[in-house]
Length: 216
Image 1 (tube, rainbow, N blue to C red):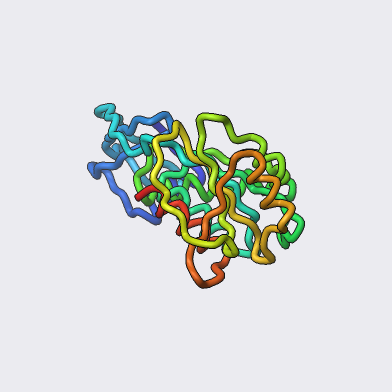
Image 2: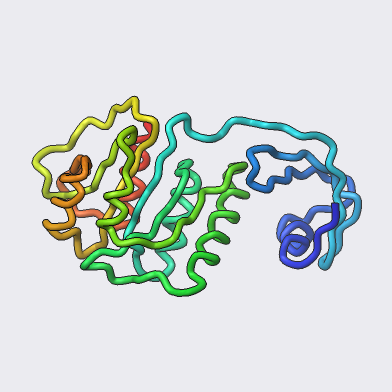
């Protein structure tokens, strides 16, 4: 197998692989491929695949997350951590108080973040990035067999998150907060408001915390 361009640069220059070194390849199909380097320089790398392995690293109950995009490089941090935590899909949601709206080409950048994070954590199934949608539409997309949890700091009490659902969907709003109408609409469509504690969390902190709680 032959690589050139950015992947060759990553293998030869960043990872400093040389002929005879071992490496694991993945393409998001759920398998990983142990390989051996045959040739490497800064422009091209040739590998020999020597086996196919299928380690199970995905969650038994898929987690789907809809989050209002934070500003700046915090988006990259959010996507990296959700990938590491095993989230199945990530949907940028648009809320009344959103401060960052997805632009053309943003999806491709988010997908690159997923690939880089998957390399680091050895995840062999890529978290999917779906098209942006209004928070109301995302709330309406919950299926009857899924549990829907919406982070809302003004809910009365933290809620237990145990579940036997086929999947879990989460909503985390922008730093300006979800409006009462947005929360009420989600609850009317079967979502449960959950309180993550007495402090107001940034968007990416709230999303990571909620995924970690559900995953645990």
